[in-house]
Length: 131
Image (cartoon, rainbow, N blue to C red; front, side, top):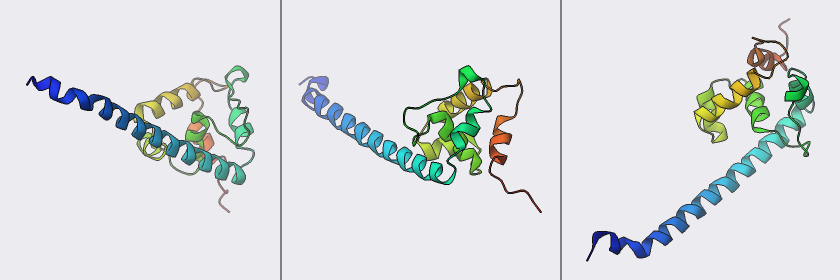
């Protein structure tokens, strides 16, 4: 028997199982994002407006669902909570580190002023001033 032919009947099964696994992973991630967004926005209902105010008008993020964050907003929401390392953000959101880096770069390039430290500003957005 030819080595490749013995696996042939199983190839479709393996692909189907991998697709089902990926679909289940996607559904879990969607549920995670929805729960995170809902909880975060219930605590900070003005976050989207405050976040967008830091960006040029043509670069602002809009969503039809006011209870949902874009991936970029979700990353910066985590930064407001003190999670500011891209590796940690990627792990929490189940993104690759490169994806987090790309989203952060996109936002940095969209700020109102060049060289604006948006992560620092976002991190301090809800911090309580020391007395």
